[in-house]
Image (tube, helix red, strand yellow):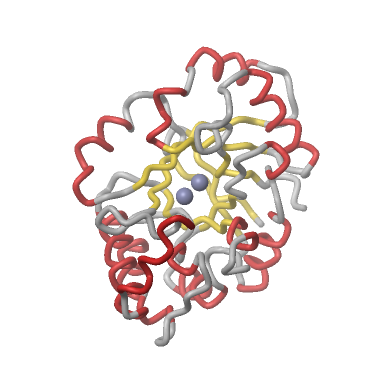
Length: 256
Ligand SMILES: [Zn+2]
Ligand SMILES: [Zn+2]
């Protein structure tokens, strides 16, 4: 593991089951250190932001530890939420905002309980629609990073046409907006059994000059940094030689 890497996508609150306490943040930081990371970026789901405690966070940041903490936020992007998201972004001094598409028109396509919804779609049409919303997220100007770029593959339903073709306009929008994409290892533990994004998509990102971050999408301390070494190896294999860190929404390129 490269000693400067950061895990920029962790949820101390999980899906709401975790408590936002100093002890829990310390567990996450300790695990990040054990995983050989230099930075840990908290990115709670925006719908749980009311449970984020700025004082607890400030004391976690004051702690003397080898891990440096960053404050992110993972926002569920929907085209109708622009104003709401703009307001959320000013609530705390965020280092970065991740824009993620978790539902299409109210259908939470990444949730196992709603999996039968896939039956209603021709698969390439679904991929097109998903990437159309991702492009809108990029064009919104609200985010620094696009989360789990090809989440639509979560249950292993693969497009017929090459995904790079279906995602082309979204990739261009991401590049034009100067956003990063994250290499998110959570997909390895889903039916898709593959890092987000797929290698061919990552190659297409590099070709367009899109920078990268790394994230485990940990919902428990034990998952922090999970398989990030594989994400870093993938990035290098594809040809990336740098990644980005964020501080107060400013990106800084770091050698990989
Ligand atoms: Zn997500
Ligand atoms: Zn997440």
